Length: 279
Image (cartoon, rainbow, N blue to C red):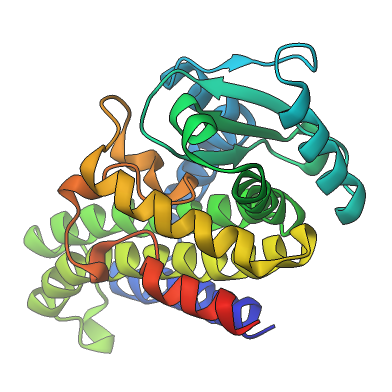
């Protein structure tokens, strides 16, 4: 519940930034245009993101005959969570990792890398798959889409505010519009939006960890898997892919080149493991 509340507050902050920009623009027409455009872009991404990301990583669907043990685990977890069984995909990469995608539980997909299958024990694999099923059950894909929409609005409107301030088109003189303040906010707000979006991603990871622990029946499965994945991802980051998809994976697939934790889409693995061990 704490993570749910935190997510709501962070989404509220993103919305507040949009309203602030609306005031700086001195009217609603520019804000409405930017909002509609960002929603259109993100709705398209929401409907087709699963196909795009699976294609990006050259993932192929696995039938029950291709990976019977993997399908058994997924089916068991889906039954425990009261969810439709998602499709199962394999990513042909040695870097151990996994992600879930799909616009709803009925259209969900769980994807694992070859490296994950080779590295983990059956219990650890169950813990990872339970985490991904937790994302599906918590509808994190929808929440991330909403966050991306709001952040996209802020990025777009910030550009409008900068140009409006430079050419004297923004603000309302009766309200004491300040072009310099508008430019400063237009520079700072997108950075703030990015940090808020990352904070939402980290909050959802904690929630998926807890949900995964409940689904698997043993928090130690996921804790042990995370320790292995963290160690290997630093030595063996993914060779192909787009950093914009990093938030989808159970651990950062590009952590070999990662920046400080402030700019990470994932919470520190040590903290995740500590929370799991305490359950």
